[in-house]
Length: 89
Image 1 (tube, rainbow, N blue to C red):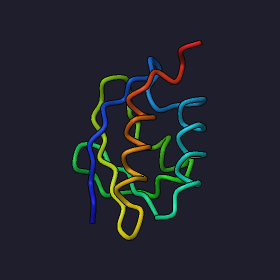
Image 2: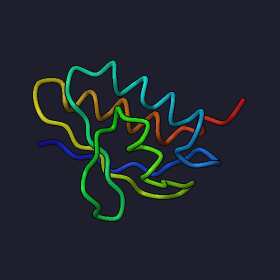
Image 3: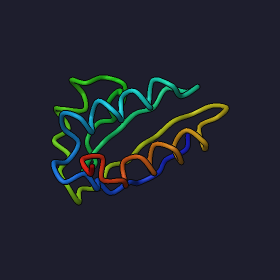
């Protein structure tokens, strides 16, 4: 299993528009991706309910994990997305 840590850069955290953009990117990946915060149980990163219940705010660290062929590339892309201010114009 491959894991990466990302720091949420969006000003409002992983809510509304940033969450939607992140979920769209997760669904394009060739592997299942999970997300967790503060050592919590990993949740399905493609689920809006999971993302919203995570409560990840600006500056929070989240852990993304995936397994299988393409996991490294998928996590690299997703970390880069989370570490971008998706609220910026």
